[in-house]
Image (cartoon, rainbow, N blue to C red; front, side):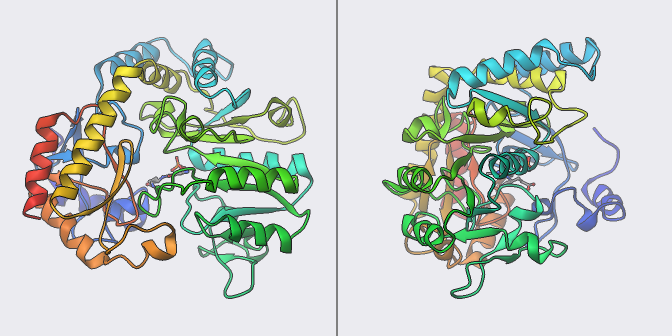
Length: 416
Ligand code: KE4
């Protein structure tokens, strides 16, 4: 066990990192209370530095579809580490993992590995601008695609369609290149295309929104985006960093039968190690250096250990695994509903929303009672169940959450 308890580690971290964390959501600002210090994970459980065990629905925010410390993934990582590298050169693991991805997502004819979802999303937008010669892109209010400047924007006020910076440090002219539409509203996208004719390079969308809480696409939303992009000469980019290989073997694009021009991936394809990838039509990816003139590079892109973890993960994602994920997700969601909670679910992703009706967009999601959510969060935590510390995140159910874990979760929720 690491030396020192939670308080000691938290104090040391507070002196080193902004807010004491290496990613904001971990600081628990949305729910209050003391952020945890985790030291071990196994299956569906995590332990903090004081030895407290939790049933974990954070799952590192998505990568751990098999649960913590999957033995096969761990063995693959250990073997890859022992083999040396990275090499600053292509290695077989990149080829094997890319072939696995392409076999499951045929829209990804060619791809490039990077080291985070952020890198993947910003690179895909760069390709889209190069391919179309246009500068503007459309994202959705409540959609999150990493922290690249052009994606940290908020909807302009009122009629103004130009966005304003969503973070300090984002230059206004950069923010103005991104237009913000309303999720599940094809009309809001259509009007942006009409008022910005021939200027929009791409629409980037989470095919199942998971960063406003889980908000599935309404009928004809995704196909409507496909049609608008085709009519207006723009590219459709699916951000499948969360949904990829989770909501179906071929991701949301298989589940909903809509083929994007490019796809952004992350999380699961790295088996818990730092990864991202963007890919799609061959003619688009061949614009990327050194094949083309869109520059993008990365010292550790395609890292052999990351590729081995991703390969060992995807290799286990077969029909039985998806049946288990669906069983686990459904059992948990139906159990929570029977306790009176309002639950949105997409496979093994779910969110308990504290409002009378399930939201269909971020404007509605923001009307949730976040105070009530915070109370629910802390009562579950006290009962040994850890969910993401924000109303606007998804619970990540893994294949390792067996019936006992789910029943214990429901017992905790019954009195939360
Ligand atoms: P990363 O750069 O964090 O690897 O990926 C960014 C990203 C891109 N696209 C989608 C749909 C995402 O959900 C993310 C990152 N997800 C958040 C959780 N909602 C990561 C958690 C965090 O920021 O610490």
